[in-house]
Image (cartoon, rainbow over all chains, first blue to last red; front, side, top):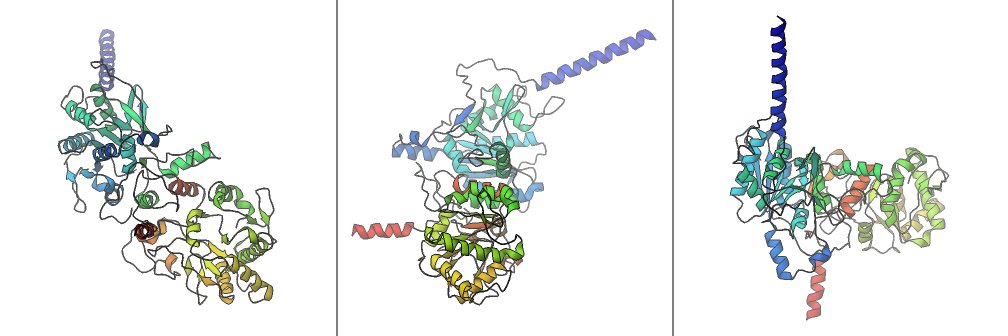
Length: 318
Length: 257
């Protein structure tokens, strides 16, 4: 009797240990064996200054402007129809191309119906579709409609960056050893990064469609893990002063923080003048934000920016 | 216009933001403090608002008349874009009797300006307001400050300016942005647009790019609007509304000939 109980206990312990080891391996992000030497660990990508831009000739500037075109990949669902409609009517109009990818179609709004319930599988399909239909677009912005984006400032951030180099930018977070871009602040991928990502999707060992781990990683972390295998690392998007331009919080939330942290310098201590994204605003707040970003301004303040972005056709709220 | 209990929660933030852009700012209260506040011999409370306003303008007329051409009355929960206010006022002569703000229709036959949205008196209008009370032509006949002041303006033959931009969009607003900017189906006037003199527009066409004021704006909202107005912008964006651009181009064309 005693020996049976004993082997049972041994079996339980062995099995338990085995399970733990398996699930640990499943979520383990291996350090990359440097197959390439240019494994440059830039963790921050800063916009260029206005001064730097003056060194470009007019024709060089024209070239840069024509190349910095953004394809927006917006992941929607009918259950957040109001956000979806708001994204259609507000910031997404400033993308050179905006494609909405949904889990199931809605009669009210147009989207590519991926007919896929699993969020990670859906995101993979959307990225693949965007890559295959990229045309001559070289920058990709992935967001949910609960995020508000200022595409002109995204273009400014990546203006002098080479899209044939891998860039994976946004609001960088850290989870253990893994650095990843927060989904809710928007994810920016250069053409090269997207290409590598779509290719590593085919590797079921490195980047499985259905996770093997006991607990599933969120999509934002899965992207980071998969990209890491291809030598691409998350980089924090920042303005010339080192302030983050991708925000996972709303303007109100960031101001509230700043009122606590910098009571004598609330606005300057808060957010970048060149912010690209905010998250957590209601659809109505986003309508007001369109006005606040694209129209509201003090008369007589001129900026002498080095390039011009024109308002989109057929829009009345910007 | 403020009071002791709002200095920390509201007026302080105004002092940190838009008040700095005025040529001169005075904080009117019932109590003198190092904020600094001016003590008017009036109690706090909505019923005393018109007395407070009368005393405030009398104080300014007595001590500060020559320090400005235009006199803005605003509340401690108003957000003002002073640069845009200057732009609106630049079209009018301060030596003429002008009264500028968000025009309301009822109660006074020529109409009156919303108190909440803030209003501005030209130097001549201020002189006439003071004269009205000195001569008894204007009295404290009501506690409804904006309407009562509007009646005095009418009595003293002060004219109401049109503060809208060249596209007919409003600059002074008695409520926060969300009341006006959100798209609506065509509908009868909601309660907060009932008094409007000019036919109100709901949705993006409501409001000028060069907004002068919003009301019921506190703490976080105040700083958020300051950020959106003076800081956050889309790099390189060519705005649709450029009211002076055409005149500039015309000038160039003439010079060329």
